[in-house]
Length: 112
Length: 114
Image (cartoon, rainbow over all chains, first blue to last red; front, top):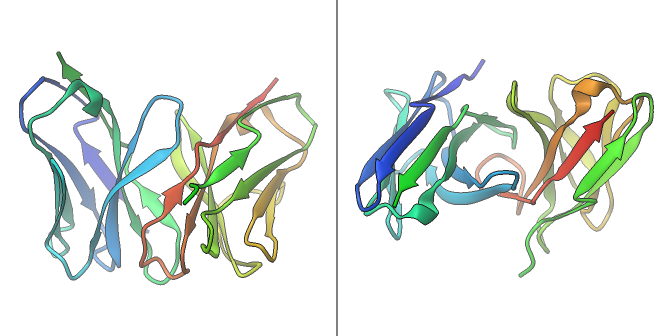
């Protein structure tokens, strides 16, 4: 059974700092790993998807890495802004189907 | 291109009632998945539909059911509501099934059971 863990559960950093969010998974047989953000009471916004054959994926100030062998992914946010405050979730689909197993999320607060 | 839409956005029901939630995927997307989100359990997979067929089902009781129509729109139904069914219900769509593509989520339907 795939288990996905995100540490820390909450993180507060001053505006402008670079930060890293962590995601660990137990079963390395994954197609890809997807990072989402969720604003309070809202749905999920897809940020990045890394295919299992990739090591990194970048979008603007966001960079996600994937190390399948160690069961880890990181989401790097550069030059953080107050608008980055949200809960960040990583998720992996089980091989061959759409079922996503989600981590518990990291609640990020950027302090102006 | 319009995103995933879900209706209604908010619902209040009482125990024992039933409820139907609707999800319209992004145009051209044929796979629709449903998730339940609660503070205690986080995001949990309910079921997935592709081309009107249920491909996968999560670990939920039979009171939770769904279907998909020929235009890829999907509905989920919860019968005999319980207090514990209060949650944010999210649907997601992707172009194809198989787990290899980005899933796009709707804004969710917040269900409160009294």
